[in-house]
Image 1 (cartoon, rainbow, N blue to C red):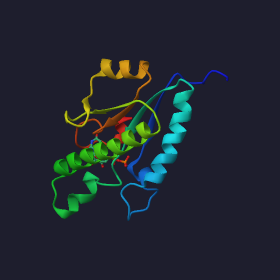
Image 2 (tube, rainbow, N blue to C red):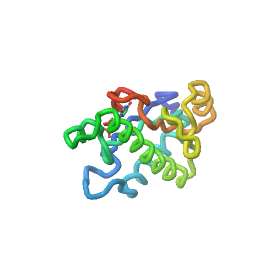
Image 3 (tube, rainbow, N blue to C red):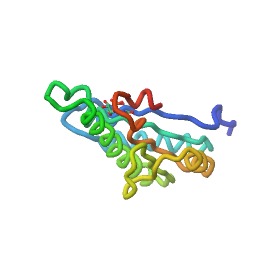
Image 4 (spheres, rainbow, N blue to C red):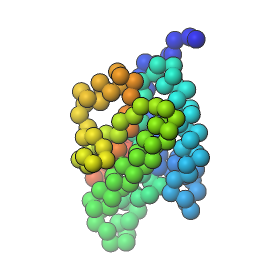
Length: 147
Ligand code: UDP
């Protein structure tokens, strides 16, 4: 097999990618399964993989401002949504035999690791797929900026 073109990649997955744009469902696990298989194919080539996950399928801070929810509060809700998605991706990847770590920019020690740069790099070097949840950890940003 030819050597992979990239040693390390970062994949940005929008929240909407998790339900295929079908608003009646938050997460479509069959779609997640197909992503997991694609990611596994790349991981099996020895490519180090990090994923930034969005939350737009669950919550976006800006879109609830008009309902009277404070923007900063809404943005934190959006960041928590990305962690929910991250947990779903993590479980799906692990179901397919991959090793993963979910790291969050907001501390949530019962469900994910805090984001520590050196630790993240070590995970990648050991072949663990990192999923970055909670975006930048700051309101008024998006997960695209995070990526
Ligand atoms: N968010 C935020 N700071 C960040 C990342 C995300 O406040 O660093 C909030 C923001 O409200 C955003 C929501 O989390 O709308 C979900 O993220 P995003 O809209 O980027 O998700 P995607 O469009 O990728 O599904």
